[in-house]
Amino acid sequence: MEAGGLPPREADVAPAPVRPDPTAGASAGFWRPADPGPLGLAGFAATTFVLSMMNSNLVSDQGIGVVLALAIAYGGIAQLLAGMWEFRTGNTFGAVAFSSYGAFWISFFFLLHLTARDGLTPHAVSLYLWAWGIFTTYMFFASLRTTGAIALVFLLLSITFILLAIGDMGGGHRSITHAGGYVGIATAAAAWYASFAAVINSTFGKVVLPVFPLRAV
Image 1 (cartoon, rainbow, N blue to C red):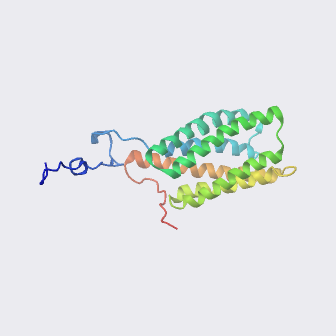
Image 2 (image 1 turned 120 degrees about the vertical axis):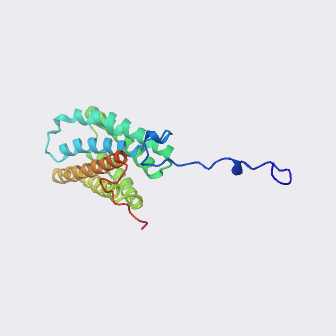
Image 3 (image 1 turned 90 degrees about the horizontal axis):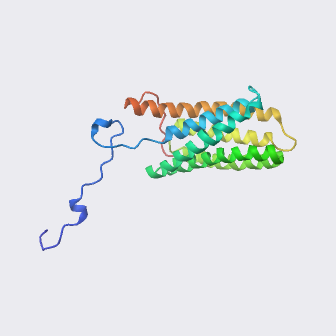
């Protein structure tokens, strides 16, 4: 009891929550949840890379089934799970980004099925891509409070969506779609780098690959 007969407040007797040291291993004596970000980035990168190889016409789009498999499993479900786990960590940016792009790939899976069955018009696909281009552009501005590696991913992805959207406008513009494919390959490379950096820096407990943290704009 405190002076005056009042019971101690909970804040006075309960220890403050301790945040785990991100460089500490299992020997630290507590369970530390893993960062879901590298998983989300890897799923996004792999699916974007394969689709972009076809959009750039470097690989025949007759192998689109490979994209569908990645879109539903790795780019879709795995990335959506990463987004849900980001909500648990309190990372609003990561939660919105990974959940949204996970949903994008799942919707893309069904879009290709609908296109094959019902024959969607290029205008409808272009509208779909413009919507994602708008979302990615404002996420790019939000990414300027994260790291240079992540900001580069969103900048390149914004350009990719815009080029692909233009490529599907009107009667279609294959050269612009091919250009979007090349930028998409660069986007995948940037996302893979960000994922690799996060994994190797966490594993080694030090900065092995820089991600270039950004200050407030």
